[in-house]
Image 1 (spheres, one colour):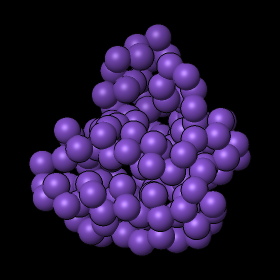
Image 2 (image 1 turned 135 degrees about the vertical axis):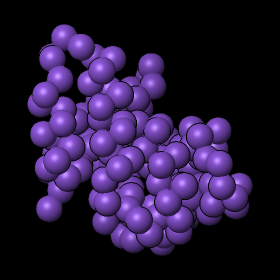
Image 3 (image 1 turned 180 degrees about the horizontal axis):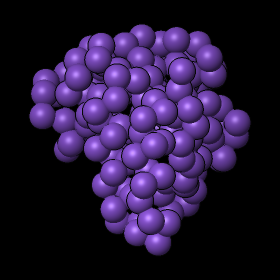
Length: 147
């Protein structure tokens, strides 16, 4: 089972909140790091998350934003970190966009995006509706590096 590990705000405008859920061994690794050592804590978190078989990111919207803008922002964050096929990033963007389009085209306050990263790739859900999976471990590692 995944355990809640971390929450932060991404972007200066705090458009959404991010919750990180990971395996218990990731939490154990973090507990060994001094509270004041933020750099080491972040490095430990990132390496543990990438090494885990299962990590989930739950993004919850704090403000309304268009589907294209949301999908593009996430894809632009993943793209420079992804060393695999550029089509993987495009598929991720498409899954996000299609999920928001099914809600009327905008991610409104309270909309949730669940990104489940594992050995099989990244599975995208919008407000609990599964949109699909981008297969491959490279896309997972790139996604984990964003957060």
